[in-house]
Amino acid sequence: MMASATKPAGKSVSIAGATTALILLTALNFVNYIDRYILPGVQEQIKGEFRLTDEHIGTLTFWFMIAYMATSPVTGWLGDRFPRKPMIVVAALFWSGINFFTASVTSYDSLNLRHAALGIGEASFGIFAPALLSDFYPPEQRNRVLTIFNVAIPVGAALGYLVGGVIGERYGWRHAFIVSAIPGVIIALLILFFMKEPERGASQHEKAKLEKRTVLTLIKNKAYLASILGYAAVTFSLGGISWWMPSFLQRIGGRTQSNAAFLMGAITVVTGLLGTITGGVIAQRWSKKTPKALYLVPAISAALAVPPALVCFFGPHNLTVPSLALAIFLIFLGTGPVNAATMNAVRPEVRATAMAGQLFIIHALGDAISPRIIGAVSDRSTLNLGLGSTLITLLLAAVIFFIGARYAPPLTEEAPIAAA
Image (cartoon, rainbow, N blue to C red):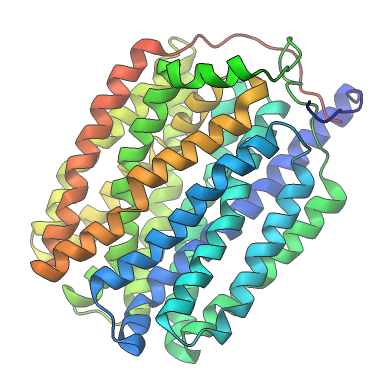
């Protein structure tokens, strides 16, 4: 049985509650991605200290994602039955604590264990937050809201590179993780005291009711499956590029660790931010004519990203940075729309379970394996060829999204937002 919720508040309070939730959850998502992308910024230092191969470095993300995926079914089940606010707070405090204690890591195995534990906390937040926001906002607003929420990805990732590269080079890589632990604790406490828990399904006319047969319909939901499988292929590419480009810039471009981190951070924050906002605006306007826009925007963006990525990996060195910037901009165009497509494809009572399924699939088939695969190819040939594998999955993503557009559910006007 689902946890009960109090009666919805008045309209003015509801809007304020929804806005507060969006701001705080976006801020926490920002910190979430800082924590995740510190490691790529310092991985060359870690590789040198522990005398590792590229495949070993790629395996760090593998174990992070294994824990991430193993946690998602449990957190999805919890998120559809109990209040999500306290679980978000606990998750943020947990992963902040893990980052703080990274200073005591003295071996590759203990670093692997630490990184796996980090995945547990981040998986919980990644499932609860979009589902909670979808209870505040109706379908026609979710693309805009989830675009704002996902703006934190490129900004947080960029700062993660910078924190890792600069602090790691000056004070050692362990200190970079300690610095990242503080903001997560602060935002978790702000959420605890200032964010409301929305009534489940409050943004829709029908009362949310969780049933076993409703959950089972997810595996037959073609719109849902297309969104998560296409997203998985994009995640393989983006995860692999994000993980290995700092090393690529150092090895192939001859840059220092801090310079490579600064470049990767600047490219990610500027082009990722512009791409996320631009893609969200295009999809929002296009959606007024057809709900297929939530699938067509990520399909087109994935296809268009292939040529500049090809130039980045195999072209002349003077084109590496501009082509990388263009590729990342194009990939990020689909970030907001694809998450909105997932939420709109499912009923409110299974949103947390649907997000758990999405996170499991996109990481199991995406960035859980791409850094390790790229590293293994690099060990046996070159890093250029390893990164070249991401071109195939970008094309695959485009095909899946184009097919998924056929099953896009209509966007309908829903009830006003309501908060408990």
